[in-house]
Image 1 (cartoon, rainbow, N blue to C red):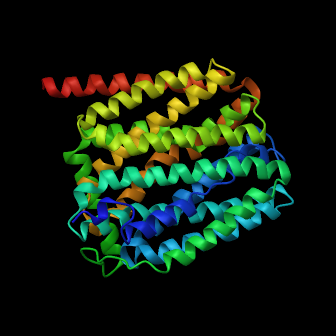
Image 2 (cartoon, one colour; image 1 turned 120 degrees about the horizontal axis):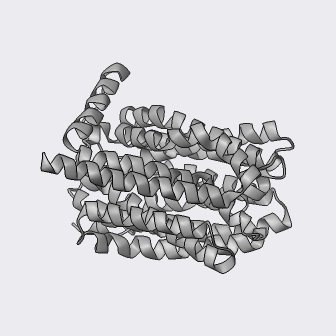
Length: 393
């Protein structure tokens, strides 16, 4: 009964291996530096906006294909597309060519996201172990963070040798990921859909049910998640670059960040199970907003520590929110519903990304960060007021 509790069990072991390979992001510490070889912060934000857009655009069809055709096939396709996109990014000689390559790489991320968590949960559920999902998800997050930590240190050094090397390393890892995905035996899900129209109708009913019966927790998770997505999609990395770190220093800084997050991902699920879900969400948001504001007024080592603190709050928020979503969503539409949630979180950033990048070029990152942290706090206290008013009624 305990075999799925450990990452050493099959198929969880193979899924963990895919997570490690797919998240060997050698480009993480250097992507802003690499993009700025072709453009300024405005162009960086534009490319990141387009990247987020294609990622979200692939989420819904990826979720549908994952539910209808299978998670395994989506993982294989995602890995192959990532391999092609990474090679193209490394060979890019112009900004348009870089845009095309990054968009291919981003589409692979959408397909991967649409299938991986659903595959983990369904693998556990097929053995009656879905209650251990939170623990296994924490361990998977630890695997992801360790992979990112190692690849970040190596990627910063690779960039110093040759700016193309981090992208070529990603292509090798994702190709291996595709081969490993071929060996997975996919568990059966509750049912398949006869047509996309029926599938979409049922998925819409699932979302409507969430917001009718669980709005007190569903709406805050989505709204707060929008701010966290904006931070993780570009602001975090741009702020790290603004502190003046070199590619090698960024590599080691990201490595330290991921090591801390790996440790937190390992211990947080056990600790958070003893605390009410809404309390965890609220604590993570309050501390995130505070660290966001302070980091906008910090430099050097202190700024780096505050950035790590923001990442810890994001991980805590995402772990608990993932548990909440998976518990409320039936497996037959789980992948699509989770994908829709990701899209809702990302759309606002796509809309404002270019304007945000232009602001960063013109007025700097400090006023932008401070304004966003103030908006997040205002939203939090506004939601508190609504909840209290509703409770009084």
